[in-house]
Image (tube, helix red, strand yellow):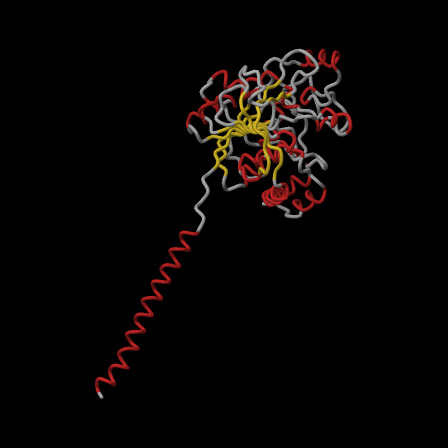
Length: 374
């Protein structure tokens, strides 16, 4: 009786302990699986950004937003180059935006004030022979509503957003780029959304940066746009960044980079529409209010898309691998990109480039809107 009494009493207790141990093991297994399934933190994308910051607002300045708001980005520095406006004025607009975005820690480095060879006089002579250049950036003729000052490179017209109180770095953009690439071999993505003058000068001083950089992503490279220049917005179908400094583009495209990404036509895949600008502006944050105030409605998000792809390559849904160079011979095609297949290329220094043909536009727009609303 005693054995019968204890046996039923003991066995359930033993089963309970076994169940408890099994439960703990399962829980431990579930914890291990959960821990293993948790995504590992993404490594930072180290970026040195070079651009021509026409401001306030518009694509140039707005392209800073992903670099300042994306947690995946380690922004090493920002170079400024004359292009859409003179370098001195562009620097002031970039500095003021960093203040508004509460990121005065980001170093701004002043770069080249002129292209390597091209001058205003040369461009005027070219236009007389081959036709008008629709947009001449810093050299554009003054007109109502725009503050171009082609003959005064040091002028900073009144700034609607207010003048900056912070200063640019004493180190120039060319040497800042060289220093950062050499300090982080194999890690730095160079992103250029303006004329390539600063990058070309860095290559001439320190050719090793091409091999030391992780890659270079550049915004020009539009292909087959002749008809678009006639039937659509001529400015938007012209490859200004190559056209303003063709020799710099040639130097960059023929340097021995590990990887070259050219954005080309895809940068017009999304625009600053009124609904998008209103949606961002509704957030009421300083950056959102700035964008709402100064965005140019209907302007493609050229530079924003360039930066987004440099940060997150999974946005790319189609690309073309080809050889590319820029025509630097005198003539009507001066400053235009030229592409070949590997079999047809002249093999005179041109490199393999990844030309982005399509991106996930919806995901890009949603991500940018969220970043700009912060």
